[in-house]
Image 1 (cartoon, rainbow, N blue to C red):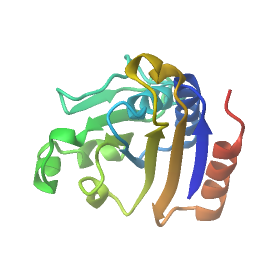
Image 2 (image 1 turned 180 degrees about the horizontal axis):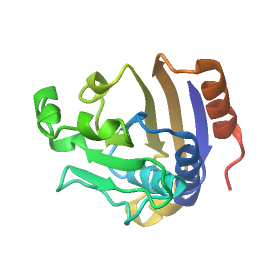
Image 3 (image 1 turned 60 degrees about the horizontal axis):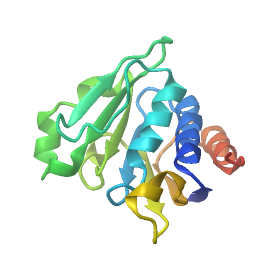
Image 4 (image 1 turned 90 degrees about the vertical axis):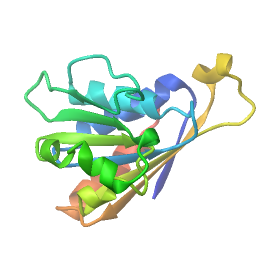
Length: 170
């Protein structure tokens, strides 16, 4: 597990952009964090790194949104699993269909989407306490990234991920 400190929402987005340059089709990211912690900000940056079409916003009311690539890379499937109550409901939205050609990001997905793959990144975003909503853009975030499962080629990919996460954020 690697922990990164992002001093602002912009730095959180930059970390997402870096992840977007690293991920590949078939990768799954499970994002955890309280409301307003920065999960969608991180995903927006990931979409920029992937070069996808459309504004990446929280899919809370639509549950799942697909952002096609503008660069020939993988699409971004952005899921908000907050309102999903079981793995059966995850199965109902048929995420496996998109997984081979896309990167799946599941906000609030812990315990619900891991059955889709044998490897994923667990990303936990924590905003510093003591900040109100007006200060959210300037709130420091601690972002933990842990690789779970079998990654191929594990040594090279995970070493590249570790180096990417350790680079200083703006």
